Length: 452
Image (cartoon, rainbow, N blue to C red):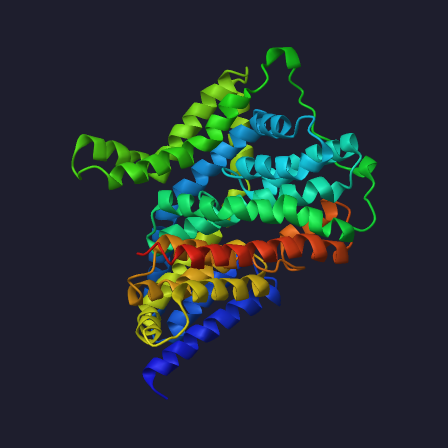
């Protein structure tokens, strides 16, 4: 057996071991990624100490690129949720519109609210509103809940600063502003099709209506209401749109100004995901926090609550970077790059396919993206005409394919909306599978005019 083939087989075995550790032994994804990476290095003949060093280097490099973005995005979302800004956006969008417009209205609201925050947190925050609207409009709970989940997951699956796309941006060396631009071009039509349109089509399959009186109760604040001003809808909307707006302005500005000039430096700063999110956090702190009468202690609690779920995600992202670094240390990434020249399958399609298979096996979109980028990143060097931004979207969209019983989101949707497993498959699973396929179609369509 040749040395090259032996290394490729070891790389494939490491991926298989990773899947088995997570699915069969129920090991935490961080430990599974770390053990798989270190096992690959040692099995390839690398000294244990050097294998650990390579893993640590990859861990640090990945978090250096994606950690601040995810942290600031989560911090922004915590202030938006805690101050009532997200609830204000949702209420204004839904209002007292006719029943037929509810799916479209809540999809749009969820797409905006989901931009700066983790899916699980945004979902739990919006569920009480879904029950309230369903009661008020006398409709099936899924008539409101399914399009809400669709809007949130478009943001979660395609747009930085969410973990999966942010990790892929770092792994592929993509431009964050362009990734958001192409993501919105694909994501907005996708939200329409998988939100209001799909809801109308599958409404006949909803099944028995859940008991609306058994829904979650919105938490009641202990702070007297007269001490606070209601969050401003305009300021809440500006808070959500400020980071992508600044990054898009930066991307367009740097493309049309001379490098080294003062305008270029300004636009380059706007194009930084860290600086754009930092500006939005500072804006939200005063516009939604201080202006609404919250004290510094309360704002700190909002921020802490928002950051709490991020710890495990950060560890997974870092370990994914360590796994990628081990593929480089063992030379497997170069072998993949060399062999990829003769492959007939386009890199965009392969990135989607690898991420989709890992998602189906592992259940976690974040872990699937972390492992897929480690495998697929070498293809970019072998395909210089491929846009790294589209590679981000292809990989991230593959990582939302076919959510089923090994995905925590599947059970979150099922339990909060009182559904059977069969109902969840024909609503939640169908919706996410359609999002993944439509996103892939949008990426391939854009690739005819967008190149690296």
